[in-house]
Image (cartoon, rainbow, N blue to C red; front, side, top):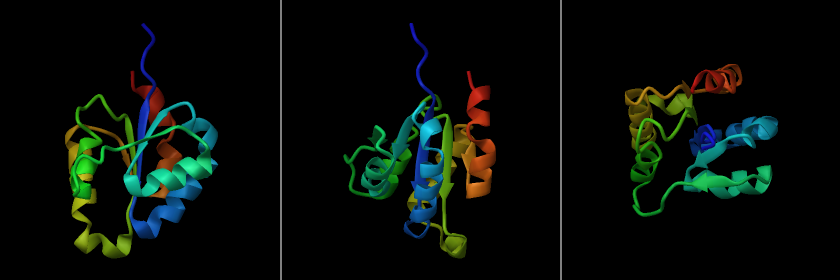
Length: 130
C-alpha cells in the first residue's frame, strides 16, 4: 500500500489573501507534491492561479468556523498549516481563524503564521513527519 501524500492547509484573512497567493505561487512546484486544502474563499483564486488540484473544505455548514474546524477532523488529516492573519486585527481575531488555530494546536499540527515562518518550515517540517 502506497503511503498517503502529505497534506497542507492554506488559510488567510481577506487582507492577507494576496500574500498567501504570492507565497503559494512561489512554492507552486513543491505544493504540487502535496494534497492542498483551503477555505472556500481561497479555493477559486488558488485553483485558477496555481493550476493545481486543491481540496475545498466542505460547504455543509454555513458558518465559516465550522468549515475551518472540519479541515482538521483528526490529527492525521493535515500535516502542516499555513495561516496568514492580519496582525492589526489580532486583538479581535476572527473566530473561525481562532477555532482553526486552537484545533491545530490541540492536534499538534505545525503552524506557520507568516511568510517568513512558512518559508522556513515548508517543506522541511513535512519531511520529518512519517
